[in-house]
Length: 304
Image 1 (cartoon, rainbow, N blue to C red):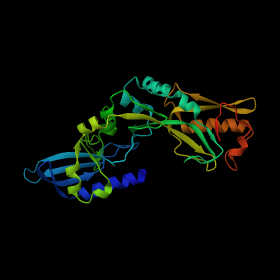
Image 2: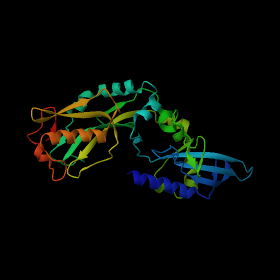
Image 3: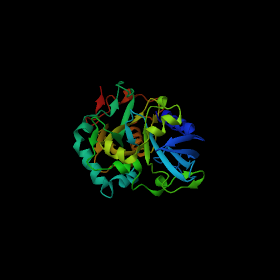
């Protein structure tokens, strides 16, 4: 999905590159088209297409900074860490996040942690290490909470963001505010064939702030697939996580609700491995989930 979206962004930039187009009643030439990147890496700017457009009549230039979303888009922030949460919510971010978690605490407690059979998209052999923190546009999942704070500008346009996300690198130079979009495009890539399909459909960001302000905090399971010795990233920061312990010769599980984004998934996995080794269970070569069938306390919920 990420690769597909990245290709769509590249496709849009390709259409605009070296083009002439009409925008807001005036004719322009695209002198520069690029994706502002974060200096030093580590994430992305919100701008998907940074354009230096030259007016063909006055020869004056202007910046057109586009963020692109498909009509069926869902996630607006992912892989959120404590630093990013602080930029979105302010210094009270931890209490706000804890409040969201508290609203659905019972839902977390219902979720299986060990999967002895496949269910939905969760594979047999999966073990939940915790739940990462993301944000959706009008999400409706059970492990989701409508965000009460008005954070539309922070989420959509990087308001209050760190300078490296705000001031992206364009053509090997840091360009102030290049990572803060001023227009958005909400179309299927298949509908975009020429610049005439792009620029008449651009909307100012101020409109997006009003129409897409219903943002939901979404908690997604961070699963370790024991049968593949793999998880989706070792450094996913967890909003809620599992502390594994050995009690009376069995594996015990405790959910941590009051320290959001203070644990990386790699450390949570190491904790699990240490406990299993203490029980005499080798990890992960030759491991099968069935060896845990009689090794789990009641606190370690399983499916089925």
